[in-house]
Image 1 (cartoon, rainbow, N blue to C red):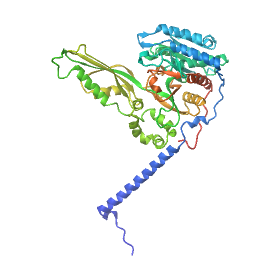
Image 2 (spheres, rainbow, N blue to C red):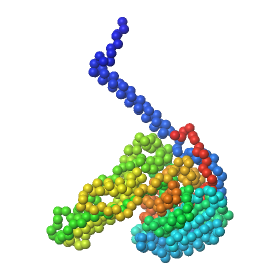
Image 3 (cartoon, rainbow, N blue to C red):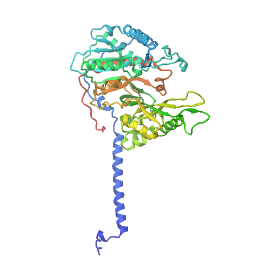
Image 4 (tube, helix red, strand yellow):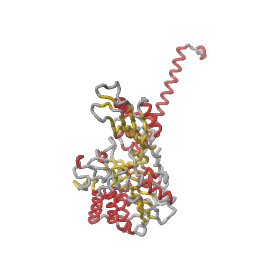
Length: 529
């Protein structure tokens, strides 16, 4: 005999609870299945570098430089001479103008064809900077700009250099000296590439500019900014700008299988903030309960103990790891292929080390602390300077508000000395002309390298050019092994003779690759998302 159906309304509370639980469990299981399906598809997809490399590229010029033994000796000699000239920028009021004049003469001597060719228009800017214009045979093609800078930061032999910092001494295939990385390798490489191309009769289809600033290390207010003003007066708009910045990292990213070329698509913002405390002075024999030094020290301690919020995944650094994900082994490949889910986990991992921590947040560095005039006098004034590098997902104003909140003491005066917001993020998709041309050139040179967009934690002259283009890229094909990044502005800055020659070949290929009128249609793959 069939049992009668019991209406829901007459079921007991326990039965209802069991039924609801089954529904929840069933729904949860479905959600889990969906998540597993999504992460599996993303993990198994081909790398995002495949696209344009499988497409049909328009034929560009293909002039080989054929660097023989004689040319190699000559280009290395010129480069070493450039390193030996101490074009140091100490401050906005102290630059080595004598060295800058010597450097100008070197350029004319090292690259006679560049300076004498009727194809190249050269002008001196702000006495020591240079602007070169090479018109193209097709004026309808928007020009681009390559940037580099002449000046370097100070260096002292007493700091522990294995060779004097302005000696350009060659040891085991490496040239040591201030400027080998930052930024005379790029500068000399660009001009050497153009020199060789001109000698071989090259004339571009797409015109281009070369800008050489003389005060980049002190913000480029005279060099780069005056170059920008000249171009603005001439109504110049640029397809893209390429400047120094990121490099080819080999063995630097833990767990990555093979080298990676990171092309900077943005820069962090920057701010210098002064904190100061004023209090009545007094004799050290009768100290107050709190001194100006103590109040300020406590404020500084609060800033160090309460870093800016972790923002990994909210800026272009997310795209870096998405591009590199397929080059990691499991489980990192699985995690990095699904940052929509695992960004908080990756962010917590990256913040453990200073170099990767700089990618995930606005960094706070106490750089100067001044107080006191005599050992037995309570000082009336204590002040400290804080340098901040602002994450792409924050603004300068938001950072200042957080500093005030964290300090939380009305006795501490907080003053912005200088600062600017993070730079706009340049395009890096398959329709991005500048990014894809740079990427193709990298892969022409180094086929096994994976290419990804990145973020510069430092600042370059390129930030002054944002009114002339929407796409600014920061990359030099320097090879960085573990520990090499510390040489940047540090001791034992160096470049291998082989890598310097690669720079010349890279810029030669880049110039010729830019002669195409447009990018090929993106190649689509069933494995791509």
